[in-house]
Image (cartoon, rainbow, N blue to C red; front, side):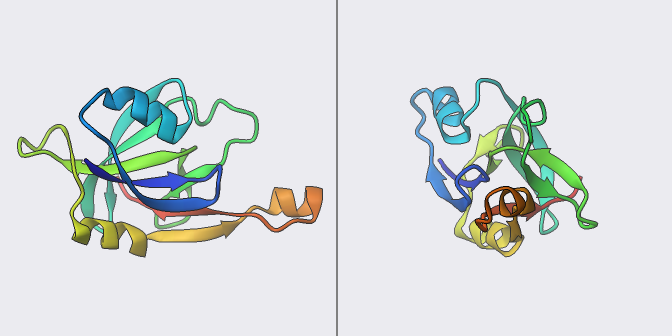
Length: 131
C-alpha cells in the first residue's frame, strides 16, 4: 500500500510502500516509534489517514511535522499519510494525484536550535494540514 512518509528525524519526505504482511511493525519501523495513532486530516482540501507517533510530543525537544494554515503546530514526530480503502473507513493506498497534492503541501523548515547549538544548518519537512 502506497503512503507518504514525513521523516523529520532524517530531514526527508518520500513515498513508501507498506505490505499487507504485518503492517503495524512496518509503521513502527518507518515512524521510529513504539505506539501509533491514526488521525484524519485534510491536505490540500482532501481527507487523508495519518499514521503518527502517539508519543511524538512526549519526547525531549519534539519536532513538529504538521502545521495548520496559520503555521500552528498540529502533529509532532514522523508520520505516514495514507488514503482510504473502498469502505471509506480504513487505510488505503495513495494515488499518484494524492502524492502530488501532498508534495505540494510539504515545506522545508530550518532547525534553528541546531543552528545555534552546533552552527550546522539542518532542515526538516513539515506538511500543512487542516481538520
